[in-house]
Amino acid sequence: MIRSVLMASMLVALSLSSRADTPTPAPQVSIAFVGDIMLADTPGKVIKQGRDPFAPFASLLRKADIRVGNLECVVATKGQAEPGKPWTFRAHPRTLQVLKRHMDVVSLANNHSGDFGPEAFKDMLARLDKHRIGYFGGGMNLAQAHTPHIVERHGLKIAFLGYNEFFPRSFEADFDQPGIAWSEDEQVRLDIALARRQHHADLVIPVMHWGWEHEPLASDRQRQLARLMIDAGADAVVGGHPHVTQDTETYQGKPIIYSLGNFVFDGFDDEANNTGWLLHMVLNRQGVTQWRTHVARIDKEGTPHPDRQQKGSCWQRGWEKAQACER
Image (cartoon, rainbow, N blue to C red):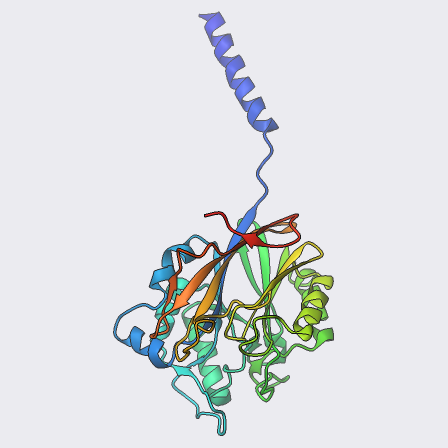
């Protein structure tokens, strides 16, 4: 009997010792990024009818710890359309309940956030707060617009910053005026540094609104700014605005995705404008470990559908370039 008890104790001790010797897995977080989300016009009508334009991608979005997109419209009931601007987008507040179902954080740093003026923009900020949808790249003043939105998952703090580079610049935030963040190089460097120093972020990801519309390759300015941000301490750079997907790059071992294209958006006829990416990215404390794209085909109602025939692009740490994913 005593021998049996001793043997059992030894087995328990060996088991505990084995567990103690097993290294704890490093924490990691997964993020799903999508491109331009425009919830006015036809997508807004789809939501009014009780349908969900995000539904075809819902399962892929749910797989991520954090879901991020560019909100390419103002969501409000106030304001007047900016005179002389050819395209102005204002979505009904009912769309936010659908947005909340699929997005955790949105960038406001784009050329349509100010389409209906400061009153509409302030109305949207209040509604996003009420629905507990995080946002960055815009705020009630200049300081808020340049303050990162911090999300903590699995013990990692991720800072999201957003900047617009496409005119009009008239809706840039000021020290006492609401608006969006514009990308001045020195300010961008400072914002990235402060994200780590003041906000104690483990990872920093700028999300950009830049480049020329319909151009499949990033411009020299995009490349210069992306590298500047990584040199300043960014772990990855993700962009949009051209309404098409663009090329990708690895710089200093860190990924740059120049444009994700459209995601929920109607009004385009060309196949390139109706093709977007969902970017799934995995990071640990040292940065991005891997990423892959899922191809979206957008129908006439502005609803994206996964293209199962397209492999998408894949990358993992140590690769110089992305390559076609395995099926």
